[in-house]
Length: 169
Image (cartoon, rainbow, N blue to C red; front, side, top):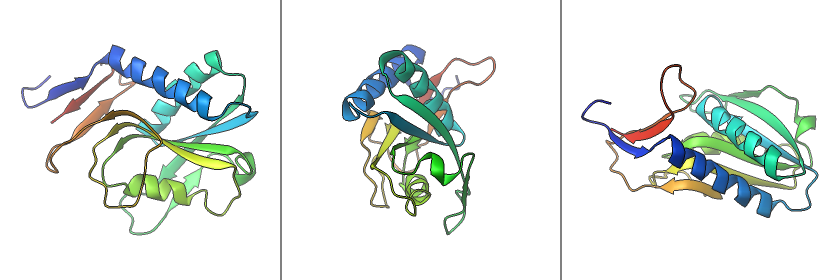
């Protein structure tokens, strides 16, 4: 790890945060038959996969995993999903991303679901940096972290030869 990086979460702490978030999702959705985990590609999707694994162990509802691809640099919503809208229609949708900074990515992610009726939409992030410029609230957060704007939070998950970790640079 280069000297300019500060370890924020190690592999075990990330697993603990994911487990806690999974239990919060379970409590928020008691009685539901199906829940859609919509992971924003790519690290949000990786986090959604981890949540799915834990939720399959602790819950009885059917989990639908949805991949949301966004053009994050676009000035308008440009998105595609790997499943048709009928798969999330009238269901609970949980939008998952790794880090919340300005809120733009989550805002665009929520936009994908606005033209389809749903029971409720919740948001999950592993790290909330609290620099929102979009009116976005997170429902389930692993870690709230106060940073300065020039700092960067990196989430490393499922990278060959590297352990999961979150660091600040």
